[in-house]
Image (cartoon, rainbow, N blue to C red):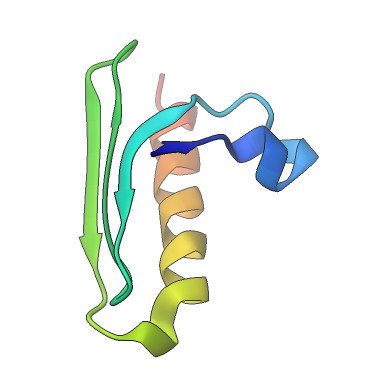
Length: 67
């Protein structure tokens, strides 16, 4: 699975294309091969899917600001 942030929301076009998987219980594992960055999260509930995507975007945004 590829997660293309720019296709999700145009203001996130500068975010890298992540490779990985999103699980139904808001469990994710994504990898950016260019920066060798892994992001793994688990919120453990199908009701937390939106929150988990927001968390992924916020975490990646914080990491990108630190570069």
